Length: 228
Image 1 (tube, one colour):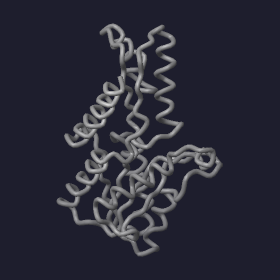
Image 2 (cartoon, rainbow, N blue to C red):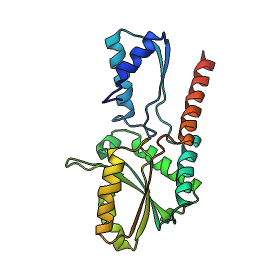
Image 3 (tube, rainbow, N blue to C red):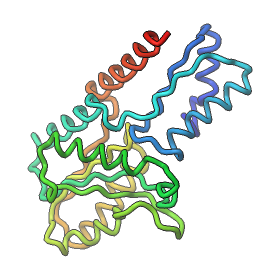
Image 4 (cartoon, one colour):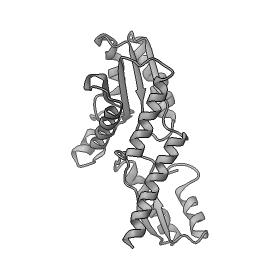
């Protein structure tokens, strides 16, 4: 965990004791941002400097458009649709960052757009059948838009009474999906006149997610070994 336990330092210490000389780092953020993925890399470097441990490092910067990841998401949605009726609108909600970060070169927004476009294409959704929104803003400066909460309040007035919503920027469900989306934003939607709010869980520990991560890891390891 970047900000919790088990810590990056404790994991690296285990690898050091095991004699590791090459370490592949896979931040669990599909879409790269300097605020998240880069923070993992910084945390690894800082921990290694404290430990006087200098293994060779390879970092997976992102996997936002990897076919295995895209297919795992699409399949999780199809499984949901096999048990519940497809809603009028499909919503992708990703964590927001300040707009100025993107203006300064952070590729996060482009990665979010590419992820959602690829999933929508895989599901054969038309442009009017889905939307990309951003959640979790704070402070006064503009963040990435459209804002999720404001959109939830506005959708019923547009004639949208049912939505399916997914958070593909999170590898596992957490406070921001279980509380902010599944509780708070659901309330905004229902209070504004919406009828059906279907939250689709993150990939979590489902088999296709693990298989996708293994595929991504093996591809990077193979390229690393081949380069040597």
